[in-house]
Image: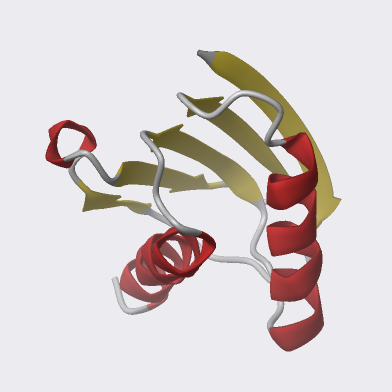
Length: 99
């Protein structure tokens, strides 16, 4: 298991919490807790060793296509593809934005 922490600038404010995915599904689980900070802190626990570059690329891409909210994002990854990871992350942001 590898633990990764990333911090990226946040450009929008949300409030609330959301969960997407199920860690036991062999996929991934994403939990988001919004706060008024100007950063998004991402804590990743992954079963895929040496995946820092993949996660940095994913969040770089997310920053270019949407504004990221301030808060804490906890990701429990068990080998999900980058596409599934992006969907789960976008799901929690969408859920909180409609709460």
